[in-house]
Image (cartoon, rainbow, N blue to C red):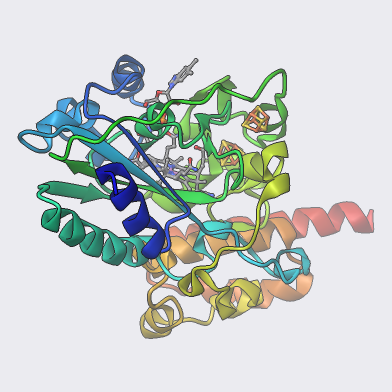
Amino acid sequence: MMLEEKVKLIAQDLGFDDCKFTRAKEASHSQEFQKWLDENKNGDMEWMENNPERRKDPRLLLQGASTVIVLALNYFPIDKGVSNKSGIGRFAKYAWGNDYHDVIDKKLKNFAKALEELGGEQRFYVDYGPILERDFATDAGVGWNGKSTVQIHPKLGTWFFLAELVTTLDLNPDQPMPNRCGSCTKCIDCCPTDAITAPNIMDPRRCISYFTIEHKGSIPLEFREPIGDRVFGCDDCLEVCPWNRFANASKEVKFAVREFVDMPLINFLELNERDFRDLFRKSPVKRLGRERFLRNVCIAIGNSGKEKDIPHLRKALNEESELIREHAQWAIDAIKSRSSIVHK
Ligand code: B12
Ligand code: SF4
Ligand code: SF4
């Protein structure tokens, strides 16, 4: 069996949905990335500024790096209608199950061990690593970077994670595929905050995913209403993508839908630190922390709640955190101003 086939078999055995190879070389859009940094589009994500040269070129990650192995893992959950009930906040689908970092990290460790036996030395990454994952995914022919900047796979659509192993093994590269967005602009048109400023250019400082997951402080007033009932991430530019018509449910049991996805928003206001940690154990939401999560919950109640929710928000006005108090007050005012319009 050829080395390439052996590696693809390892990926399949570990449950990955796709595995492709490309050369370890400077990322094809390293200049665009530098421009993005120079324009401070990383916002609060200061960690993106750390050693940008390394992020642009995987040869700086491992001496003798020859190949980038790019992996795709489907996370599409079976939707039981959870996202449509009133009084329930919306979590991005990628967070409906257990934290993908932990799930994929385990698989990558085993992958690296198997490659060692084939004579390779490697570093592996999923999300947190200093590598432009979508550039290498495109070069390897996993899919193409859609106008939303999300990588589209011809069979999985938008609903998959990326992971990479940078290895000294010399593997024959796969062929990139053409960009198949065509004249479609659905993702650009649907974005509630106009964060996709041009095809393939997204400004995180306008993105709901950024505000609800990465942003540390108070949410700027102009973005609070467009956030709607979202409490963690945003899927709008993914949901509308026509390439999702082929998507099937993920086979990974650890991505099975967790109970918190279906919990009434007001119940989240009752969580103390320990309850929060217990409820979101092994979930990516845990890393957000209770304070920022309740900030998001207040906005979602402010946008979708009713007068009966006001007493719950009033309780939140006694929180120690100024961040929570300020967002709870905003939510009370938003509900009141809506109901005064209705009563007029
Ligand atoms: C920072 C980050 C974010 C930020 C910024 C996103 C962004 N678009 O930059 C925020 C918090 C907003 C975010 C949101 C989301 N993220 Co995120 N994120 C990342 C992270 C850590 C870095 C991305 C990055 O380098 N951004 C900098 C910009 C410049 O790079 P880029 O968007 O990848 O753009 C490249 C191309 O677009 C290209 N390019 C630029 N200009 C042009 C012009 C033309 C004409 C062309 C052809 C190409 C091109 O060059 C750029 C550099 O390579 C990656 C993991 C990683 N290490 O790569 C995950 C990652 C991109 N995120 C992921 C996910 C799942 C999401 C969300 C779907 C989560 C959610 N539902 O809320 C959203 C999607 C929002 C969106 N439209 O992108 C997945 C995406 C998987 C996929 N199928 O694409 C990744 C790969 C994590 C993973 N390992 O699976 N994310
Ligand atoms: S994740 Fe939401 S806010 Fe961000 S670019 Fe996509 S649609 Fe716009
Ligand atoms: S919605 Fe349309 S333009 Fe956007 S990524 Fe999907 S196919 Fe491309």
